[in-house]
Image 1 (cartoon, rainbow, N blue to C red):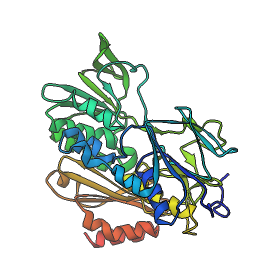
Image 2: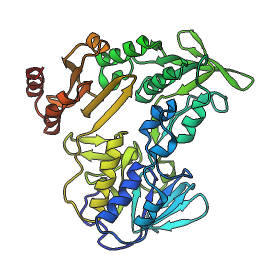
Image 3: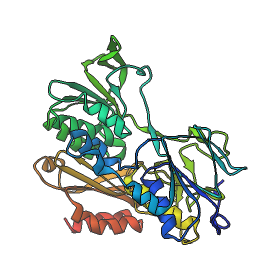
Image 4: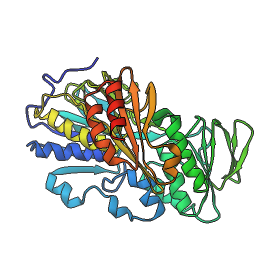
Length: 415
């Protein structure tokens, strides 16, 4: 059952443990200090290095446009200034709410008065591909570094899954001169999120850049020889030769370490409207599922902006600096080739997607496109391609959950 905020915030200076040295985790730590918390503060991260930004991994880092240092979210000096005890290169392996302790895989136990869970997500793998050289999932800087070494002129890449990650990797690989085939069981790339019409725009964009896009078909098996990938067999019998395979079929919340804790982890860490999962226990970022009062539903977002906003919000809620529930207007973006896609609100699970400005054909010729997304009788989200100025007035309609008719009328009036 969700817990209400009453009685949850710390009201003292007991130790705080933040598990997950992600954007959400780091923002929670910063937010606590901004809110005046001066007690003991520990930040636990599985990776050895400093926290870094993940969105550029599949774009600027993969193409080599940026060096890794450019995506670091902080320096050691900043952690020192924040008074953070950094526990990097270790993984949380258990949570005991009774004794208020987090167990780490190096044998240590961290006591806490309040806890922030910001462990993010883990990429899903294709069954039977473990140990095959040339098969990659992408989540970390090390993942991208290893993948980049195998791409380039003359290499053949098959990307399994045409979501945001898969399509961004396909675009980056083409910039490196790699031959790319994009495989997606849905009718179009990102169809479940942006709808088939906008998904068709993305498919056409990739085909125009030389990507072979195969939709409506799944993967039967990954072929290998001498321990290395040689190809991909599709469910329709098609065999695709491959030197490299990227599996981008989604991710699962990183909650295995919470087994037996008593927390509801059916889809991430289930929280109430204040992002609290239990008294003194909060979640933020990709792993957090919280009740969004505006949409009247549990929401879990794998968006970079949400990680920042939710991390800062949790710090305020924990220190009693807010009495308002967490009701952001979700925002995400994707950069592919010269296309900039941006969206506000919840697009997935829509009942209707309607293009209200521009045409799919026009986008390929440099034009803009705006689409609205309906849930029930209200506008739930808006998406723009090369159309950020047009999105600004529509964002306010999404924020107030305006009626569908009002949103459509407003969008068409500005076109």
